[in-house]
Length: 360
Image (tube, helix red, strand yellow):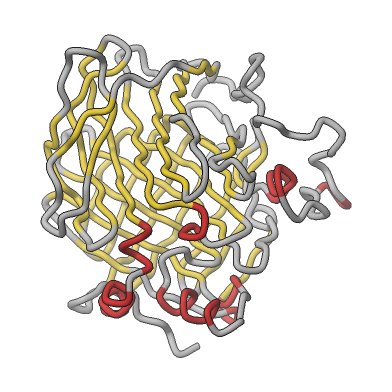
């Protein structure tokens, strides 16, 4: 493993408009929570640059916080995504609770597990406050748990799939190549943030049920915010692509409800150094089976194509792309989210069948 170096130390990599007079350290070394709006929401960070995830980060009323992992096996036969969510953004129960004036995010938590390839499984059981335990280095959501020891994120999974009940049980370990963690503001108002914690990582999957063992290249990040996603955004597109030198190129392209924010392009070197690059022109991709629009960005005069659609839902899609970035033909993990679709009444009814809520 390379020595961990905090990304974002180069000039221009700091959060746009962040206040220099706000210390990121609060009482007892925890991230400060005095800021309630604008760029001060950055202080509610779910990670620290060069340090790793922090599972004790506060979650603001109506807000959310998640840690995301994805990986593809070295042999190309398998894939996985895991999302540990506090104030689950795509929960129909949290959506309804907010409409009724209940803004408590910690009553809506889940570990989303999706297996792709030869063995497909999907689970996302929502659980309330009584099933949540956490401190700075560990997080428990019901029978599943995450822990961080400074060099490895260990995820112990014990979940039940939908729509056909079966068990997903076992361990996933994420070993960052380098630790980044610099937060980037996603919206003009400064209420939504994203931090790539490990732009590239080695991931080991060891499951008892289903019986599955593989390893490959992966990724770890975190998002947090002080309001529902659908309030700020109409849609977004995100992708990460592995480069020939062992680095990673990341694109984040949001469509706000008010104002315009240029797409973000970041190139992480294997050492952890990061530089901004100008995102290339947008390329349309085929709509999904649910007619969700997809697009990405590719070098001028170059093409991009979907090699596999991993998730196809009425408002969200995850795909593997073959595309061209920074002068290279690359494989990319890609997602498109339509929050107008998510907010519609018919989608809110449908997703209850994919997201059961535990009784306790």
